[in-house]
Amino acid sequence: MMHGQRAAILLVAGVWIAARIGPAAAQRAEERAAPSRSVLRSETADAATQALLLDGVRAFRAERYEEALQIFHQVESQHLLSDIGFYQGMALHKLGRHAEALSAFRAAHRQGLSEPIADYYQAVSCFRLGMMARALREFSALQPHERARATAPPLGPKLMLGVQQFLRSMEQAGFSASDAQGAAPRAQPAAVALFTARLPMALAGAEAALLRSPQEALEWLDEAAELLVLTRAGAPDRGRFRDLLLRVLAAVGAAGRSRLDAQTPGGATQAALEANRLWCRVAGAADCAL
Image 1 (cartoon, rainbow, N blue to C red):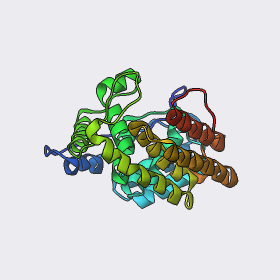
Image 2: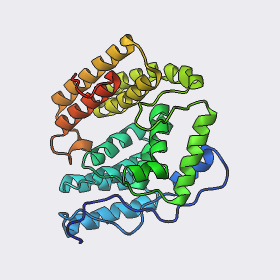
Image 3: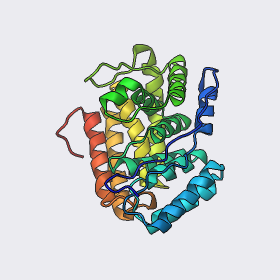
């Protein structure tokens, strides 16, 4: 084991994308993307935990995603691996459980971790859920100049082609936003109606998710926040958004740390900070509180 290195998500090997343009071609990238046998493990994991983690990797590569997910959950129950959310998120994504996948990825990001393939899966999960504002944001953030600005590892050329295909597909569907550096994004005039129409869907998605998981509701509220910023929505929508954030926080406080959040000390506090950041983003102020 290499001491002093933080845990990271599995690297990707043998990813190929067909030349066809559009989400169907890009989907092949996500279907073929798989963890390699080379794994950077948590420096505090014991040999038994590492062996179990590798069993999950093998199951993932064999496309036995339910088995892989169960193994990753078992790893989580035995050890506090800071990157376990990446593993779980990738398996959940493959199983089509995209909202849960986003929550798992968020748990890993809370540890300050970033990994290109996981970031790609996260963007695709947003797209699959119809979170078009987040998908646009996440795919745009994967472009080389944005990764360099954030000092994040670059995406490989084949998955980068997938990113471009998804972005092109969204642009052709009418979803576009300004990207002026240092300024809040704004929907292009032709896209305002499209983004505006999706705002009630995002808010309704958050309300429905509250019945299952406050963490999933937070994912929908992240989409709603992006839509509110893009469209400069009015006070009634912002008021409903704020009310839902408060309900999420109440649910998180009542339930305690969720299983997907178990590896994050102070998970409820982290959720509160994230909810407040979302509200500050929508309110357009750095100094704000729910």
